[in-house]
View 1 (tube, helix red, strand yellow):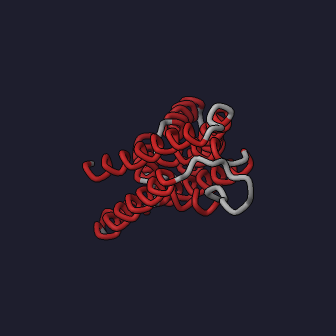
View 2 (view 1 turned 180 degrees about the vertical axis):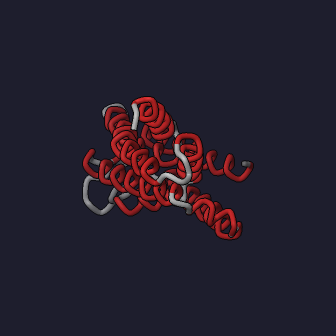
View 3 (view 1 turned 90 degrees about the vertical axis):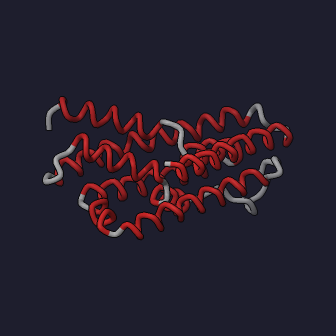
Length: 197
């Protein structure tokens, strides 16, 4: 593969991964509320979940969904329901930073599942595959996925680190409640966008 193909793929992967979306907001929230290591577990799940989704779409899953519109619609509504559930949990949070293990951060499986229910991930996969690969060349899809892996992990990880940085300034529960509710409303707002799209 030439640098002429690798560079645009990498730029696309960075733009798609670091731009705000539901998974990024959960990363930011995890960084403000939980130890860094727990947030990075979520990031790892989200990254691997996305890469598996990306490869599946590249190898033909999206065309299968096009033939079965009911499945695509069910995925869309499941994604919206899951995002609204996360929004509700974040909105109801009392703003107290957890001092014990009773309240755990979103984990690896939550991150992976979120990507499969995240319309932004499906759109990034389908548009990236369509723009930068030939549908008949699985090697290009695998190269693109290999580029996405570190770029996505670092991009999502930067949101967790940003949350950890903010954590120093949101030690008071009232401030954290305001931050959580803002993030919850943004997450719910992304659902409204998905309903209208």
